[in-house]
Picture (cartoon, rainbow, N blue to C red):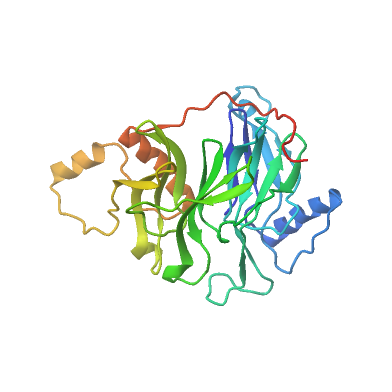
Length: 317
């Protein structure tokens, strides 16, 4: 869990996450095969392996089983709760951009105020053509370290939103900021909001859409602090215009409304309608229902040119 999954028109790519101690050690052994050595701490559970599978093979009706292909393992400290997005360089080359995440220190227990978590704000790029990782160069300030944030690509720039920067269930442990990274200028930009903005949260669903004929960043649901999943879960839907800095709320949160009493007929009518927006805090659920919510409101995603898993010369030498 806490891994990254991305896809283009031809392949599904899966990377990292957290599993068992045994599987984590196996993924680190791949580093030794690549000539890299990282010390594996006692009880390590997070993974550094990357895999891809052809969509065409998965969807084909032949008797041949689809095959996963293993790529180069991540050459730095493993982490989970990060995000992965496709970004384009000035030559049109596509990279997997991997940002943030956290890692639990040795001999530390999970999910306590004393948990020795390390949060990250470095950005890594995976080159599919050369099957290698590189840390993206950064000029100037960068976003605060975080995990369980959201990310999407808007007009070829990587956008990140929100997340968590501490295990403590306090108000200042969650974030509500928007940053973008430009692979041409190698700079991060903080987008200050103009007017009302969504409350801070972690595990939101984040996507790029076109709203009122302009590219926007959409966020849906998540969980805020202080509180708990049962008490501070959200299901609101907002869109952000990077050009103007304006947030627009399209659907207010209804997670804490008192349930109303309905007749049998009214309940039947509700059940017959299409799936409504639910109160979920999990990252996967938020992303899935973000798509459902956008379809319900009639907004379209950004149209994309045909993509290929063939990559050109690398931007970074």
